[in-house]
Length: 197
Image (cartoon, rainbow, N blue to C red; front, side):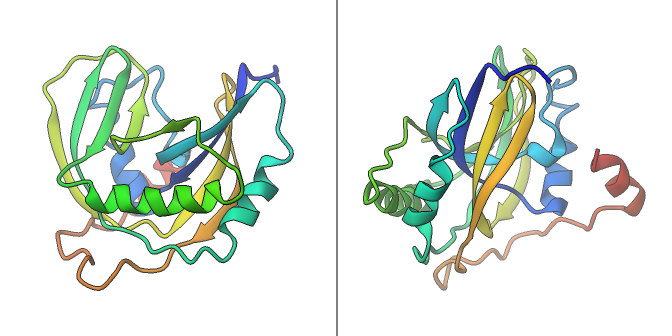
């Protein structure tokens, strides 16, 4: 396999398999065909920590030192708008972002205590569906999501490979912010098998 263009290291939330399946089902309607994101790689990036031409063997233990015992509480994310353009398509969160911003402030505080400063922070939370140029009228996909963990991912950019280098569980959200909206149906057995490719 050729060497990737760059190694990108980022922290992200990854939907559980049921939610990943339903998000993946949006790719065709969003005009994503040639450069769609694989179902198993769907995620919501919190921040990019590092980009390097060579693999970084020290970022994982540094992040582990920053997040071990951090005892972070999760948050309620409202997914809702699918939009696209020249750079591809994504599923965006809707509503107020106060909970997301508060979570990121706490997370970045733990990282800063270990001298880890993100090079890119994601202020508009979204799940990228693909990078095909597209043009369609935005549509809705309403769902509530409480992430269960933070992942440290190494992306071999250009090779389409994601390596999970670490994961840290999140405590439930504070009382009063649990989801009470509609839940997604389970994955149909035949479609689950097809969607796992």
